Image (cartoon, rainbow, N blue to C red):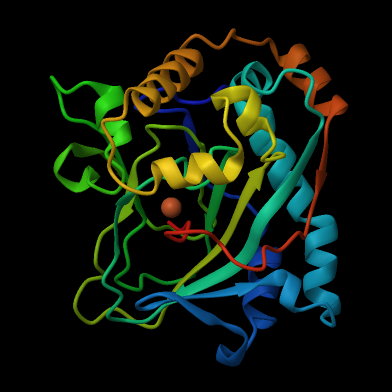
Length: 285
Ligand SMILES: [Fe+2]
């Protein structure tokens, strides 16, 4: 579990050496053929591990490698999750997938996941390729200085001109980049460099909790929240949601290592759930 999250511009962490060299070599050796991947956004392809129920290797991977990654990550973000979902003990993976990109991958513009699913609690990306492929990692962005954070957060998918780069997590094999999903968790992927190879292999997953929390958090059901967030908004209700979410994230009480461990011991994560269809813009990094 280790250290606490880096808090700026939003809770996240980056670490190297995730998965042993042997595990990563095995992942590459068992990497599914292109036919198992579907196009998510142009140039980027996803293989949901739930689509490989007959693969002993990947089912074993889900059972023995993935829990360590999930619980290690949730332990880092425990203060925020516990504060937002007091008493909640049930979580699930929303997407648990392998990704790869074509050489001319055009990147993915600034987005977050909060506007289409405010009950995501963590996004995890682990970079896998063993050689430099010309692809970028993920860029974290923050609200431009002088702008109202809540008003910016409410401007769904207009964030390209409202945010600026905070840092770019370079693509490096065995590196994990994970963040606590929230209203200002802006990120993007820059277009790949000319001559980039087919690759940019990534293990990706999202963890979320029950969407029924929307009613407690926002006073509306999940579908109504999604409808109100689908487009840029100046609706006072949406602005109030964003302001509250940002303030509550920043004021989440700190937890000691023991408190984080106790919270981890109280929760369970169902691994392998696969959505039939994602609403709106796809979640990806
Ligand atoms: Fe994303």
